[in-house]
Image (cartoon, rainbow, N blue to C red; front, side, top):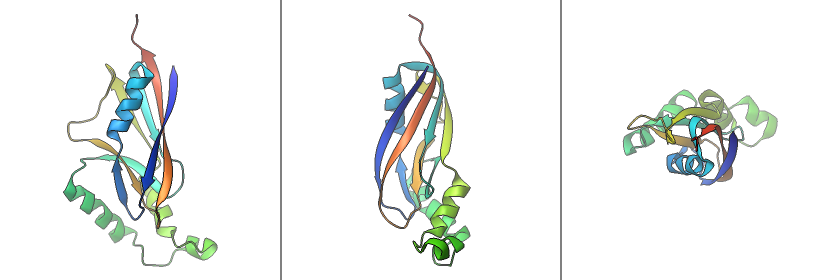
Length: 142
């Protein structure tokens, strides 16, 4: 069985980190699937998805890391092509990736104790996004 759900998000851009673990768990519960895989996918090319320990230190460390390796304040060829000033966001999103798979057993995401699913919006402006959660697996017998 395959069930697809969507999570609406309003993001601020500039490495906005949003915990979507509870929304993903809710989609899993509503699906009725007890064993399988949850795929979380962010459409678009200026945001990505990963897991972190969602705590204040890492919420500062990650933006600092991305600003160090892919700074906002330099020229990117994308900016010259389109003039939108968000070339860095595209490069960051490509590095992080648009999707994440999480195994499911006993109607639970098999995440670690301190592991949460997060979307990181790298764009240079606020966005309205719709995260796709696709759950593939089996329902309980009976």
